[in-house]
Structures are given as structure tokens and as C-alpha cells.
Image (cartoon, rainbow, N blue to C red):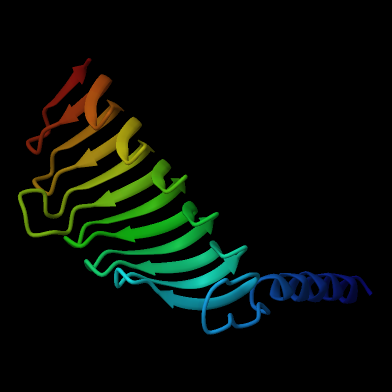
Length: 171
């Protein structure tokens, strides 16, 4: 009897979830879009594919810039909000939290472009697209900094570990 109750509860939850997101009707062929799933290509060449609410991107979606950049994740009122992945034209990638269209909260920035930072990774806090708060920066050389950042710069307490194993702790 207990297994039946659990199974029924799970099915009700699954149906409830499915009716929210997966059951959105297709959008009409042109805006305005409301409570639907569809795509629109703008005059700039940029394209959005995903959920719409009140003629705004709202819910899960993917935005493709004509420059080659791409964002896959959550939207609220046509702004990146929630979890997502932003891939830059250069190839660099940010995976993490967004608020009001910017990298805000916890995330990981991968340096993947062919430049002097290729292979480096920053994992930590962001504020308005900048390293801000506690974070760890790992260089491809094996060096690592763990500490505080402010406005994209090391600021405050931190520990720098050199590839040879030596370490500097300070401010």
C-alpha cells in the first residue's frame, strides 16, 4: 500500500511539472508571444528560442547572437536570471548564476580562447560580470590563488600556491 501511495504522489508531481513547461503551446509565427514556446529572429540577426511570457523571454531558452556568442539557461522578463551557460564569441565560457542579465552569484569561468589565459579557470563569486567575493583562480601552469576579489582584482586575504609547492599567505 505504501509503494502505491509513493508511486501516485510521484506521478501527480510529474504530471504537474509537465503541464507547466513541456505543455506550452507553440507560439504564433510572429510576435507578440504569450505563454508559449517558440523562436524569433531579430533584425540584428540574433535569435531567441525558448519560452515566452507577455512577449518577453521567460523560462528556459537559448539566445544566439549573430557574433557567435550563445546563452543557454533561465530568463525572467527578457533578462538572464537563474542558472545558465554563456559561451563567448572567443570560446571562453561562464557557467553559473545570473541576475538581471549579468553574472551574479556563484559560477565558473573557463578560459578556452587561444590567448595567454587558455586553460585557466576561475571558480567563485561574481558581481556584475566581475570576480567579486571569494574565489579560486587556477593557472594552466599549476599555480593557484585562493582568496578574496573585488572588481576583478585580488583584494583582501588570499593564498598563492606556486607550481613548485611554495606558498604565500597574506593580504
